[in-house]
Length: 254
Image (cartoon, rainbow, N blue to C red):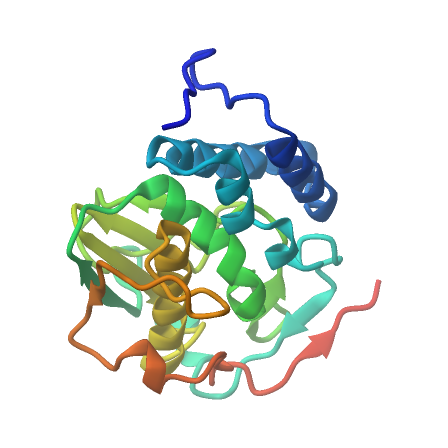
């Protein structure tokens, strides 16, 4: 077991962890507070892995900065027009109602929020359409790309509660957890059940990989715990899914 009690909340000194966080910092091109918060998330994940008995080298391997690619470095210069069906949802919102749907999966152990947060950071580059916010155009709403830290939260509200998408920095989806349950909720403008299920499956696959329960590249790791879901298994899903609400993608010019 690695001793991580040298300082309250501090990671042990390790060249592997130093290289890891140097690489992570180089791949996160967000504004100061957002970058600091995202690095804090990944430090918390590393701390959790060490507490679970991994060595610094093993923790650094699971949190490999190359999994971020250049997603958090690219400028958010894309916008997504909505198809005719998606245009209905923002116009039909009221103060107490909006079209939100939920997908959930139950694990056989309590959720480790630090690792779920890290999994969200690593999986979002595969679903750039979700790293967006809803904006009002001259005639219609549209989806605008936004690069920032997207947050996992404990479940505190009733299922499918309305989202305040008008607030600055508000996101049109949420990832929440309670006990052994992980849930994702989407404003229907973003996607339908197929795209939402692909996202949830990818998120859980990444979460299980961080736990060390998913098969490694050479099949050396065998799972001892699995995620249970009443829906389609992740093996039957495509690696990525383009949400049908976006009929095409446009580039924003300033």
